Every structure is written in structure tokens, then in C-alpha cells.
Length: 77
Image 1 (cartoon, one colour):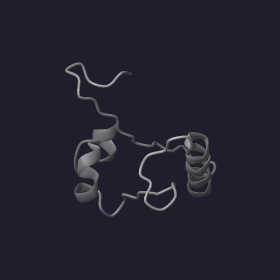
Image 2 (cartoon, one colour):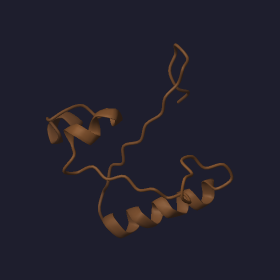
Image 3 (spheres, helix red, strand yellow):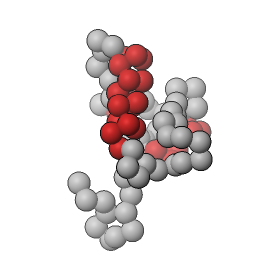
């Protein structure tokens, strides 16, 4: 399905900034300099849901996320 709808390139998160610059969006949902949640996972999730509900109410939407690992087997799925 990805190749059919987005022939410009594969769903590789690190390439979205250049390949899909006209469609890519990134939301910062934590306070000022904070990059990763510590105890704020519920707050971050609520904020993500709010944004998605406002942008895509009543539509099917596909969200691409990424995960990484330093192990030879890759991230736990």
C-alpha cells in the first residue's frame, strides 16, 4: 500500500524530512527543552490524540512512527 500511494520513497523516518518535506509535520508536545517524556507519557499521548482528532476527524489515517535498537535483532515488537 505504501509503494502504491507514495512512490517517492520508502517509509523510512529519517528520510521523511527530505523526501516528503511538503507533507511531513512534527509536533513537539513536551515542555520547552524536553525531548523525551519521563513521567509525562499520559500527557503526551493525550496531546497526540487531540492533534490527530482535530486534523483527521472521521477519516482513516495512517501514522508512521519509528523505533530503534542497538541490538542485532532490532527493536522488540
